[in-house]
Image (tube, rainbow, N blue to C red; front, side, top):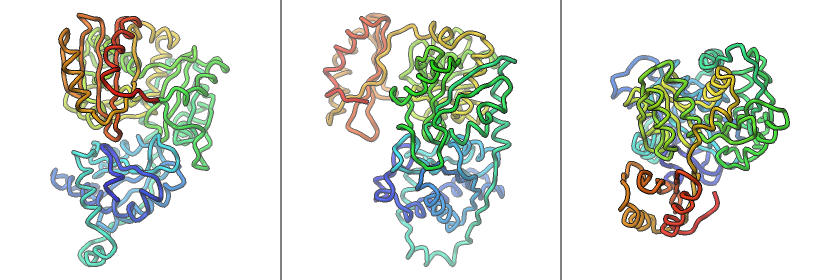
Length: 474
């Protein structure tokens, strides 16, 4: 059963049928064994390296899962610092702020409320994925049960648990990225009845009261019942509709729609239009390169060609990376990048321990808007200069065969690389490029294409789509 809930980047399943309280205890035991062992192997044996931070979201199942997870960590010998109901990005902060062996966030992010799971990070908030520890945790968890534990118990010094409130240092950290330059801004924030409903009032104040000049129109901030206002996935356009409508209704300067655990958000401009996350990456890159001239900026390979063009134009070094937070955080570390952005709405910051943060992304977007004095649509328009398909899914059981067909039939007039899936670049010859990747969890291929204009994009899609299977909805 455990094998069904371990994914490429986290642990996730429906509660209580696929993921239950006993499994949470097993996972706590396995995570503690891995995290404490990893810290010891790295030569980090300070007293704090016996500590693991635990936080949770507002789902109905989260308190019990967190309780059993903590018990499992303690039973293995790890100490727990329980920071309560928080956004996922606060876990990354807490691990570094307290110099712990790692942390576990109880959440299923943007999945529906019947789901839950665990996002695990090791020391310095480095992500734990299948190849960087999840396989070990799964093995440790599978090998422990109550009977086995009774035999082991006499040899284990059980850990302790304590509760700690870290909101004040976290608030100060996030606000260090925000500067309204004495300007006034009205914004809309859709918390999706999820964790932004806790985080935003604590960090920015009720309706923005803690930030001079900021007025926040709050929608869907009630997370007490653990029921989402809408699917908490801002990548799906219909989930951002309320934000768009509210921006127009209230004549707001910007809108922000957060996902379930508030580690990412979608930005809406003053015209009610959704801002592409790759375009926002380019805009934020310019902001950070002013402060760190010549630095590297990372972006995922699905991003518009405008992103590396804008980074280079601003004097930075573009670093093209694989999709996923494990790879993006590694790219920031390897290249000492000042900033990084993903098409999925995750934004990474050197001065946030290379970790992603929805709260900081919101603060930076507000700072850019205030400093420029220009509407967001005017800032984005010159960057959004190419026609994009968005991510299109195709269903096929023959994923490898389809990728082979893309390689065989489309590379003659361009270049190919396989950093992540297959990327064909025919921009110089035919005015378009595309990337086709396998889904990690479903029989799907994901296509992203871009062209110099809409007509060329249509011609590009007409060439590629027949090779990939049956097109499906998002």
